[in-house]
Amino acid sequence: MGFKKGLSTLLFAVPVVFGLVPPQKRATCPDGVNSAANAECCSLFQVRDDLLNNLFENQCGDEAHAALRLVFHDAIGFDPKAGGGGADGSIAIFNATELTFPANAGIDDVLDVVGPFLQKWEHVISPGDFIQLAGVLSLVNCPGAPKVKFAIGRPQPKAASPPDLVPNPFDSVPTILSRFGSVGFSPEEVVALLASHSAAGADDVDPSIPGTPFDSTPAVFDTQFFVDVQMRGTIFTGTGGNQGEVESSIQGTLRLQSDHELARDSATSCIWQSFVNNQAKVQSEFGAALFKLSLLGQNSASLIDCSDVIPQPLPFTGSVTIPPGFTHSDVEQACATSPFPNLPIQPGPPLVVPPIPQA
Image (cartoon, rainbow, N blue to C red; front, side, top):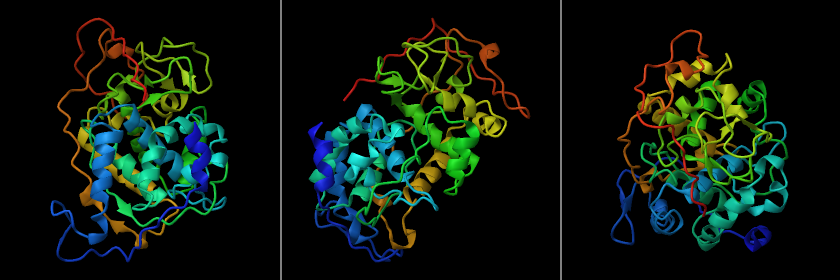
């Protein structure tokens, strides 16, 4: 873990930015291959290609899940009263402080994977911009993910985030909604952001089973997550009884207490259900919410839109189903105003979902 101990001593070059309005004519980049709406974005194509090929290895795997998690844990470190720089890269630069926060358990391993690339491109992109770029690119090889807007121009972080700003998986629904509400996120946006769990897994909730997915399709960005969490939980994949974990329905998956309760609370249950089998809705709302998250603590008027650096993610070609071995009677209906969607039942024996291969 030598990387995370030394990162806070590094100095990073900060891109010069001039505003939001792009030139009227696209700029041809010096590489002679790419073009961009703003010439300031040209240097990012080499970073993009390196991350896609050498960090993510063109897969929706553990490295991609890690980079997306880092986006959230960095950006949410902002509060109008407590302070913090938000999406500024402080979680990497001031890791000696922020990694001591309980909610950031496991981020040391994330930084060990992502950090060498952050160091490699320090002369091109600031730490806050890098974390956001890596997070957006992490979705490119996850079928069904949206193309998320991306902007550069975040300054060098000045200090560590204050403690207690990252929600915990054992926090109550009112606590979670209040934390997000303090930085301008509605309950709809909170649930939309949780779509990231459709292509993610847990390493530290139950340390005995690292890489345990949150749903049965962890390599796909789809709405199966919203179905699986709504099913009646009866099993623990690992030891069980861990703080922040409740029983899941499918062997090989782990269900966070916060996800379980958000799917059943009257404040969010109908929002949760509205994403089931609605790929267009989850793409649109997750993409908008993730970009909004990337602006926390930043002066958006000073950022440059570099979204044309981001490739179009792979399309979703599958289907959302009731998992094999279950019926609609296993759905714990929570929305009081509309029934759960009538989904096809996947045939076959009950699933056993394999863990996500670790980086």
